[in-house]
Every structure is written in C-alpha cells, then in structure tokens.
Length: 279
Image (cartoon, rainbow, N blue to C red; front, side, top):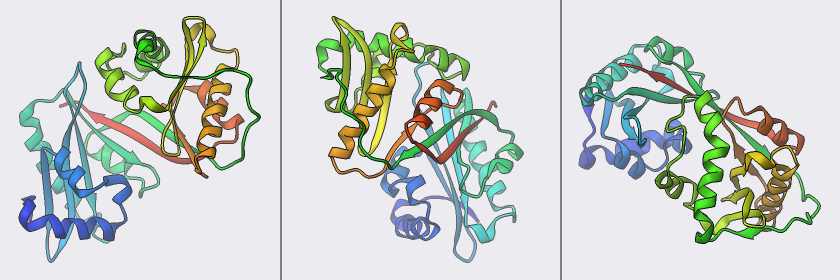
C-alpha cells in the first residue's frame, strides 16, 4: 500500500489529492514539491489516502532533512501516517543526516501529538502576524535603496542582529555567512531600504509581496525607535502598492520584536512550530 511516487503515473492523481485536501498553501506547487523532494512516498488503498516526502534543508554546518507527512482527515488514526512516516524515516536515515525536522502549522489539525509520538521534540517557533490598518505618518528619516556598495556593512548588520537569537534557538550557523546573506537576505535586493548614519547602516527593511521581511536594527542603534520607523515605512510602501493585508513573521523568543509589531496593530494569523529528531 506504500509505494514510491511515479511522475508519469501519479502526477495528476497527487495534484488532485492536494487540491481536494486544501493544503496547497502549505505544499506549494506540485512541481516545487517533487523538485525539492529526495523521497516521496504515497499511501494508496482504494484511492490515494496520504503522502510523505523528505527534502534536504540547506545549511552550511549541518545536514538536515525535513519530513512532511499528510493523511486525508477521515483516514487518520488508522495507522496510515505512522506507516508512511516510519518508511520514509528508514529511507532517509541511510543518508545519515545530523537530524530530522518537521514544520507544523498549529491551525492544521494540531499534529503536535503525532510528531511527539514519532520521537520529535520542539525546536523553535515562528508566529505570523497580519496588519490590516491604514497609513502611518510620513517619517522625516531618509531611506536609501540598497546598493552593492553596502554589501560588507549589510552582512555585518545581519550577523550582529541575528547572532543572539540564532544561538538561543540553536539555529546554525550562528554567524551568518556572506553566501547565506546573498541567498536569503538579498534575494529581493531591489526592495531593501536602509537608514544610514554617515557610512554606517542603522536599520534595514525589505518589502515583499505584502510581507515585511528582514527588519533589522544594528545593535548600537537599538532602543531608539529606528525599528518602528523602518517598519512604518515598509508598511506605507506596500499600502501604496495596493496590498491590504501585510504580514510579518518572527522567531519565537524575540520579545522586543513582538512588542513592536503588536503596538503597531499587527494581529496573530498563523503559528508554525518546528520540531526535530536526532537519529
């Protein structure tokens, strides 16, 4: 009943199953799922009932394999999820990752109990908030678009801003490398705006598609209102672009960030927990 996904025979069937299950937002497109999966298993018994896939999460210091298991709601608590999970864990353990992880949307049937049953423990969490309010007063602070001449200084701000939080949550590498900054912090560099103090970067904010990303304040400038001004600037920018709902995520335990977001009118939307398991 458990078998390996076959692109030619199963693509249409799995796509229909994902759409019917209403988990497209979590999975993304089927092409994305299959391209990033190094293992994809299906559970079929009088029709497709569930799937499980594993993918390598990039990390410069550790080998991490993410596993996601999904079973159609009316077929849960029948051992299908357990059977799928155990089979895929057996397969990925052959690659000897440092540990396994799984992302859990708490609103999605709250599968924390299943994760714990499979031997996982809480690693870190990421609340997502949404802002649906209006414009903020225009700030008198000047914002400058990011240019490559700022790269070295930008990397330093990333490293200094995230080090303590990464270490607290054991998110490696604690000191973000230039390669990682280029890949994840500068992948939308036309939408990065900086506050400068002479030749020093004070703060940075990235405006995405209705999402505030990488809101940072250099440690020596924290507590002086720059984060608030940068966030208000980013919100106004996206309101001008026509976005009505503006989202922001943060790593659980960043209490100062949470207080700032709530004070500006952000409300809870989703909460994702990440669990991990050492083999």
